[in-house]
Length: 262
Ligand SMILES: Cc1cc2nc3c(=O)[nH]c(=O)nc-3n(C[C@H](O)[C@H](O)[C@H](O)COP(=O)(O)OP(=O)(O)OC[C@H]3O[C@@H](n4cnc5c(N)ncnc54)[C@H](O)[C@@H]3O)c2cc1C
Image 1 (cartoon, rainbow, N blue to C red):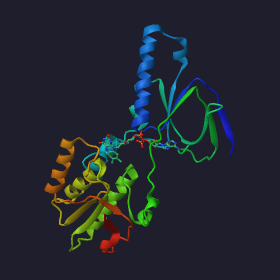
Image 2 (cartoon, helix red, strand yellow):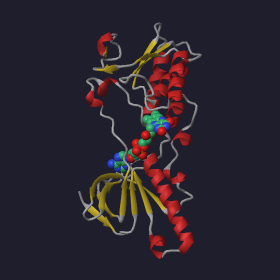
Image 3 (cartoon, rainbow, N blue to C red):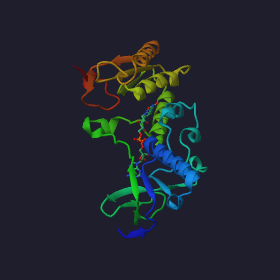
Image 4 (tube, helix red, strand yellow):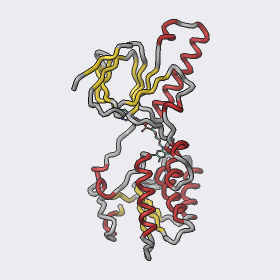
């Protein structure tokens, strides 16, 4: 790969435009504006914040369920970084996949997903924030890569929407069995939204929520946790706590051994 060097060493680079990266960029931007207003420091005038993300759109993850069941539009849930940052001229968005960091020479290496070229570029920075989030490790559970669908991106949300549509078209006689693994906020909201999705349709749905911990919504306040438990009961979601998924089998299999109680 050929490397193209870009100068501008004074830039502050933020890698990852999720909640952490975007919030850091906006906070830095207003701090710099404030300092500029106070004393017009030349150094700060030249400085730019470069926000880099491999995706073109910021995803407001708490609205992903609404996108899935059709209660929100893509532009509401996932606005482009360009539109979000249109009123903050000291933040420049660059769509880039970071491939490496050299913290001795203060430079990062990246490619541009929006172009067909695989050319690797290099950018110098004066300070850098890494906010690339976490990665799901589906291969930790046999069968998960083939048969489970993560719910983290707009693409996965649309895939779930398509699968629900296909299943609804099948007009199954028996209830649709949906198993959701993980009883944190995402799992609980997804369970409730799945029930809502099939309300007033001819498809019956049975949702099971599997959670390894003692009780769901472990990190929530006791009040919020109880609210979640009550809602799941009200919606008829079967909740299995202290239960770990050991293996995931193909969807047509009705084998009760795929989850084991401890
Ligand atoms: C469906 C859902 C609903 C949620 N609801 C809530 C809620 O209501 N309240 C709450 O507090 N939390 C909620 N969360 C959790 C919350 O979204 C996460 O805690 C938060 O997104 C973490 O922020 P982050 O910036 O660390 O990482 P992320 O939001 O994951 O952002 C990381 C970014 O880095 C980019 N990136 C990664 N690698 C590279 C690379 N090599 N090059 C360039 N870019 C890269 C990614 O494209 C991504 O945009 C929810 C999560 C999900 C999945």
